[in-house]
Length: 206
Image (cartoon, rainbow, N blue to C red):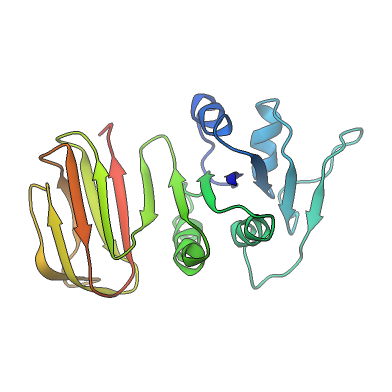
């Protein structure tokens, strides 16, 4: 089952929202993400969170699940609900935004839960990101901006093809060496790594 989650970060463009909604079997709003849905005149199937950002509106009937647990954020609650409901392919809009701490927390949640799902992708108006499996290939366009980030602190044995600055069994480590602002040189790139958690960020319109 394909799930679309709307989080309470930077509001996605309506065109992106509707495009992803057309692919989804269920729409879940993570707390304040429900405001985006309702402003776009779309009723989410489920609203879940601690409800510090969204408050029930009179006369509006929504399936609201209040989860006050402060050890999990609203996106984590939405992802856990998605998994229990049978969702295996998840797209999240609104996971990034002006609050860097919340963006980093959401990336941490993605890294924590990605093994439960077939795929989790964060999308916004700039591009998309995902945690990579040990081996991955991507059809893309030359000059697409590609960044690799070692979420686990260090990732070893990274090999890439189709990038302007290739890696050949090399590490990336926070505070030592990063993999930002690389570019595709071919219409397909491949990335593999031996250990660690590696985040791929793709920006086709920059």
